[in-house]
Image (cartoon, rainbow, N blue to C red; front, side, top):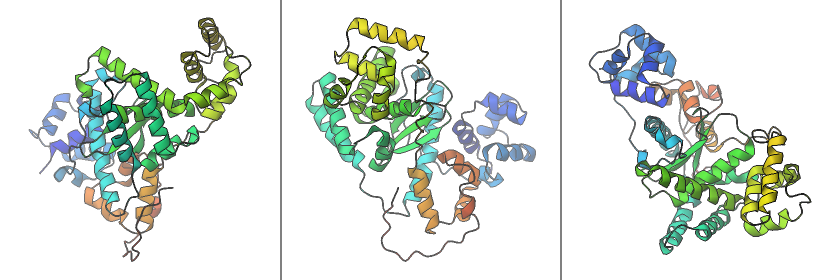
Length: 388
C-alpha cells in the first residue's frame, strides 16, 4: 500500500511546495495532491524519481509513517518578519518531527549526562513568576542567571556550552531571510536551528544568544497568535537578552573605557575579538549604557557607512565559524561502539545515508566508514556519552 502521508512529509521536510515537486517529477500539481491524499498511486517511474530526489528507498513509501508530531507551531520562535510565513513554519514543524525521532533513537543506546538547560529554565521561570512584567532589569537578571548557570567564561565557547547544556543545535538551509529559530517540543526537548546562509561567526553568536532568550523567556507564549506589535516586542526582548548575556554590564564598561576614540568603528576591533560580538552590537550596547552621546552615536554610524562595515566588518572573514558538534558526536559514539548497525538502521527506515547526513547537518560521506560494519555486543556498563 502506498502511503501518501509519507510523500507529503518528505516534500515538507525539503521545503518544497506541491507545485515545485510537480515540476521536478514532471507531473501536474493536482497529481501530487492526489498522490499525497492517496486518490491515485504514482507509477514506478515516478517512485524512482522520488527516491532520487529524497535519498530514500522505494520501500519508504510502502510502510506506515514513523514520525510522531512533537513540534508545535505555537512554540516556534521566528523573527517578526518571518513569522508571517505560516507555510514555512508548518514545514519547519515537519523538520523538527523528523530530527526529534532520529535523535531519540540514537539517545536510547546511551546514558546522557546532566542537562542543565532544564534546571536553568526552572530558575528563570521562578524568577519571572515573581516579576510583574518583563522589563530591562528583569531581562538583565535572567541573562546573568543564564551566563552563570551555563558557565560562560568567553563568548567564543557559547555554541559548545549550549550543546553541553542539553540544547540540540542544527544547521539547515532556510534561505536568506531566516537567520535562525528555536523551539521546545511537546516533550520538552529544546532546539535551535541555524541557517546555513553565509554569516560571520560573531553574528551567528548573537543569533544563538537571541534564540536562548526565546527558549528561556518565551516558551509559554503562543507565538502563532501574536499580532505584529506583540511579535516585535518579543523580538526586542530576545535581542536585549542577547546583548546583556554577551556583554555583561560591569565587565563591558571596564573594557569600553580602554577605547581612545569611541565614535570610530575601527577602535572596536579589539573588543570584537575579545567578546566575539559585532562592532555594531558593541557600540549599541555602549550607547544604551550612556557611554556615548547622541552626537557620537550619529558620527559612529556615519563612519560605519563610509567604511562600508554595515555588511562586512573587520575580522568577519578571519574568525572561524563554529559548527554544531553534539549530534555528530552522538552518532559517532553510537556507531563507533557498535551500539547500532548503520546498515540495519538505514534498512529499517528505507533511507540512504545521504538522507541522514542531510537531515542532521552532517558532512557528506561521514557515515561511509560505518557501512558494512557488523553490530557487536557491548559489555561495558559505563555508557555515559562524552560529547566533546
